[in-house]
Length: 131
Image (cartoon, rainbow, N blue to C red; front, side):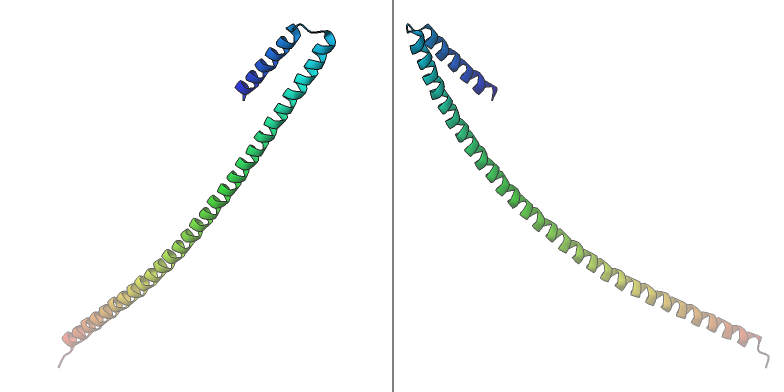
């Protein structure tokens, strides 16, 4: 941006010096200055319009790209949520299955221990029996 400004300043300075040093009358020089100023002003307005249009196009492209990226991000978030729910459901199912198995194993162990204790008590009774 600075180089463009410097370039335009150089051109305007060169034109002004050329006009001021040209062998003309004061009125002709003023008319020429006004004419050149108007011409340069129109050129600058045209350039400004082009830059403004180009900036609008870039802004629109950026907006479109942002929309696409946002849509993709939302899709990824949706997929991640689905995968998390599946994993959570699978984890809960495995936990429940392991819990029921652990309960069954515990109950079996308790029953076996009770049976052994009962058998031990019966054996002890038998050994104390007097015929």
